[in-house]
Image 1 (cartoon, rainbow, N blue to C red):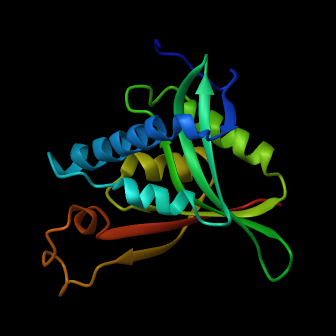
Image 2 (tube, rainbow, N blue to C red):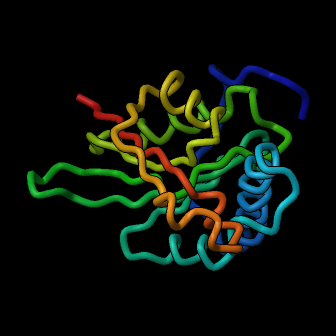
Image 3 (cartoon, helix red, strand yellow):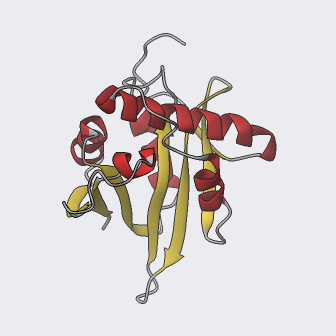
Length: 180
C-alpha cells in the first residue's frame, strides 16, 4: 500500500473475527514495540499476548479490526459501560495502526468510524505513555482529547524492575474526550 491520505476514503471498522485474532495481536504487538524501541532502543517484547487477550475477553469489551482495501491496517479494543447518569462511557484499552502504514490518516479515519458507530458514547478515556509524543500529538491535536492526569512511578521505585512493561509505562498520561 502506497502513501495516501485517508481522510475521505473507506476504512471499515469490523468486529474482530476468530480467524483474524493472530494477525490482530501480532500487528498490535509490532506497533507498540516500534513505539517503545523508537524511544528506548531495542528492548524485550513490551506488550504480551496475554495482556491483549485479557482486554478482549472482558464482558464489556469490543474488539474491532480496521480494514482498508481488504487488508487489516489497525484495530482497537474498547470497553463500553454505562455510568451512574445512564450515559455511555468508553475506554480505549488498545488502539493501533499497523506499523508501516502510519502517518497516512488511518488513525483519524479509524477514530471517525468509532465515533459514528458509538454515537451514544459521550465520554472517551484512554492512557498513553508520556514518551509517546506522536500518540500525544495525535490524541490531543488531531482527535481533541485533553490530558486530565499524569500518572508516574514514584522516584523511589524507578529502575528497580527489569520488566520492560514497567519501563514502558513509567509515566502515563490519562486523556479524555467529551462529546456533546
